[in-house]
Length: 126
Image (cartoon, rainbow, N blue to C red; front, side):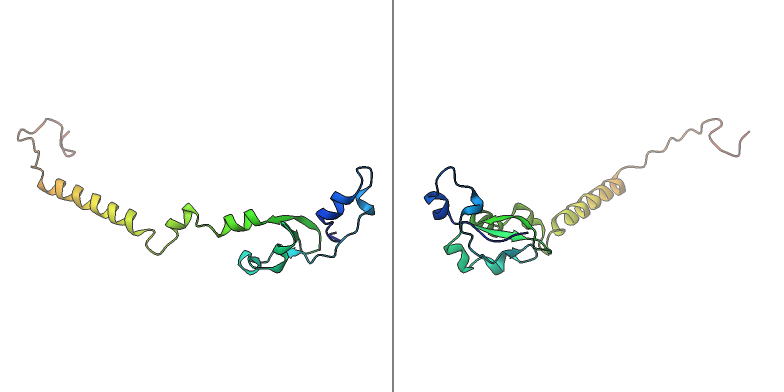
């Protein structure tokens, strides 16, 4: 379970042999994994921490959310261009145009009928 955060200052002031369990732990409110990114974009904890701890429903530590990840999530994705209300307009319009052009070609094409009947061509013949 997530308990808190050890500050960078604590780590830099400690000796290399000192175990992490002996360093002071700051009680830091973690971010729930169900929290929206927009709701924590301007959180005051970003003034203190480069990463915010992310916990699950049971309080177990899942990882950390960095400022970089938060910033990148706010950038428009390439897939967003296809998510708009006109997303299907272009493919459907091009399919309709192609179908109409093909139908016009079929209608305008001269009838290709062979004037001489072939023997055995009819199902009624034996």
